[in-house]
Length: 126
Image 1: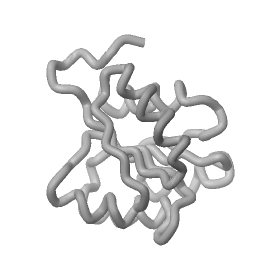
Image 2 (image 1 turned 45 degrees about the horizontal axis):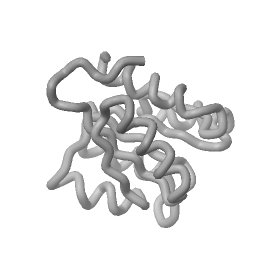
Image 3 (image 1 turned 90 degrees about the vertical axis):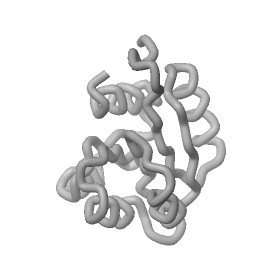
């Protein structure tokens, strides 16, 4: 897939406490032309929204502190139009809850990062 077509790169916030996953996903998304910001928790993301608003959020379901679904609910209360893509090793088990809570998509973390990247591109209309 080609890099995003606009001159200003799409900014993607990746929220995951697994440093191996975030490093891999950051590398994949950066190579695809996205600007990436990494957060280790939902709380950290929510605190930073006042000063840094990404274009898309990729949010792990299993996080320390508030989990991904609760983070999504809180995001929907303050930024209802911000696309949020949840990802999880058990995406099938949480898909209905995630989509019902307002997620743009719910992607299986173990199914490969290309599916997540494609969901990001769909969320931004790229």
